[in-house]
Every structure is written in structure tokens, then in C-alpha cells.
Image 1 (cartoon, rainbow, N blue to C red):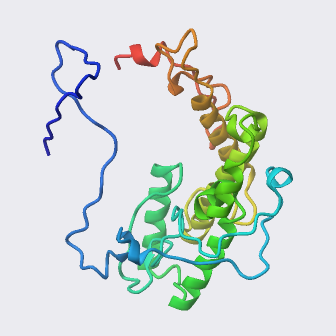
Image 2: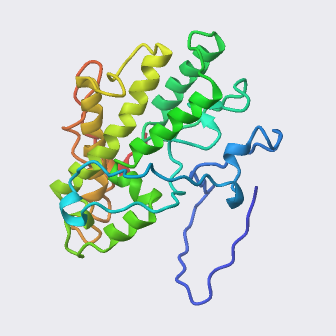
Length: 280
């Protein structure tokens, strides 16, 4: 699809010569118009169908690095946001109302790996290597997973308006607002660990040929994945807009020493030059 844009009145413009094509690689929006409404219900953006839920009476968040600063924040009576990993109507890539309908999609920070694991899981369903639970049990497990996510500060922030407000009341100089602080790195790793736990769970269920441990406890390889995810984030957070190298440095130019193969242990090597200058 071709779109035309007019320059903003009074805006700054630049002239660029010798441009053959401009490719906008910002992702895509899946089109499911070929499916009936009941089959694509989990992907409907109609706010009237949004999943609203609440935690059990007396629920309290597990202690974490923010507990001392915000205390025990009572959750909102209605929780709606943040359908990152538990999507209404879906159970681990299967449509609950019609388990013959499966969706391959990614939610974690590891899209290619997650898609591969999901494909193995869906194949295991089709070949009946994995027995799907009843619809009621699917909903119960989804509810438990949503509750687990409420113990991950990063995820609860987007699910719970009360927690969102509490964190945004923290002082401007609080470590939660300083992404390069050691405390923030620890906070971020809770989210990374949760994502790896989900992968580990599906790897075990599908018989995937590699593993990260299981949902309850990660293996050494799983913990390495968590640490490298945190290091990857710091490659972005450590960039400085006004730094001496800000004209060329990107997150791809970060120090490669923390990264290595989770299978062979082979260390990552630095780029042969600035990423922006590479031609191949």
C-alpha cells in the first residue's frame, strides 16, 4: 500500500539525494479477515470484549525490590491491561472454544525461538503427543498464570491501575527511573526470567530438543538466557543522546563480551567496524 504525506507546516525538512527506495521495516499487522468472528475473537480490539478480572480476596504481591518503597499496594478491583502472555480465549496457542484452531505468534523477547517452540507445541497437539485439558481446566490454568504475572512488577504495572499510580509516585531520582542502575537491572531480570520460564514450560511440554529447565526452576542455560537478556537491554539503556559517539553508536555497537552461545559457549565477537558504516 502506498501512502502520501505532506510536510508539516513550519516543520524542519531535509533534502536527500540519490535515494532509490525507502523501506519501512516496522513490523506488520496480521490480517484475519478470512476467519469467522468466533475464530478470531482473541484478536478482536473491541473494548466491549476486553477481559476484566480480579485477584482472589486477600491476595498480596510477593516481596520484590520495590516493596520497601511502595509497600503492599492493594490491587484494583478490575484488572484489564497487559494481555502479553495470557490472551482471552486462548490457551497456549489453542483457541479454547475450538481446539482445532491454533495460532502461531510471539509475545516474548525471543520471537524466532518462541515461534519455533510454539510450532513444536502445536504439532504435539495435532499428533496427540500432548493431551489438551478440558476447557474449564484451560481457563483455570490461564487464571493462575495471570496471577503469577501479578508478582512480576513490570507486568503488574501494566495490568493494575493502582500499582501503576504507586510506581509513578516514586521520586524523580528513584532507581526505578534510572534504567542503567543496578537496582533497575535486577527489577528488569524478574521480567526476563518470567519470559524464559514460559519458554521452558513449552519446551518441556512439546519435547523440544533444547531446554531451559522448567516453569518452576530454570536450568543453568535458562539463567544464562535471562542474564544475556538483561545485558542486551543495557546495550540500549546505556546509549547517551549527548555522548561523544552519539552520532554513530547504536545498541548493536555495544560491548559483546557478555554474550555467548547458550549451546557451545562460544563468545560473541565485536563488529569489524561501526554498525552504521557496515555494507555487508
